[in-house]
Image (cartoon, rainbow, N blue to C red; front, side):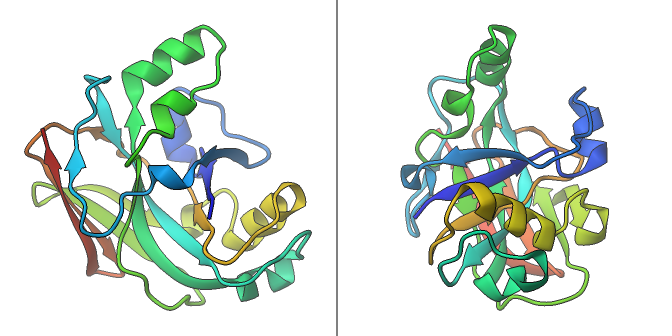
Length: 200
């Protein structure tokens, strides 16, 4: 299982971090060890003092595919949920300033959270996340720069998709810091799919 992530897939989010809006999908990977396992607690990493949440729609691949067409792409997805792509923002900034890869800021153990899985659906999909019961992020597939179809077709040119692979499809505006004691809750079409407590 691999975790494939899409960066800057909402124009407002790209702008809020001072990045250019991309012309092609921005892709990076997380190892399987980055996924928080069911039943495990999430702990604030010791190597950062600026941990940021990034809520995203996450697709789960259901069958193997390579060089798939956009028109056929969603047949390779068997479930959808909301997850968090955590970022150690201070670590990322230091690495980017030196022109270095920033996996250490994105791909560490427990840096990827996924909620309860739901059957894949057609049409627009809305999701949101609260921090301590206050809404901090809202997103909609209609606001994505690159659609699910486009992303899956593009990714499959470079990486074979296999059952169990996860695709984090990008975060909307509203990313921000979190601290020990915060409670993050993700919603898919208004239904809670995860509640995450941040422990010391």
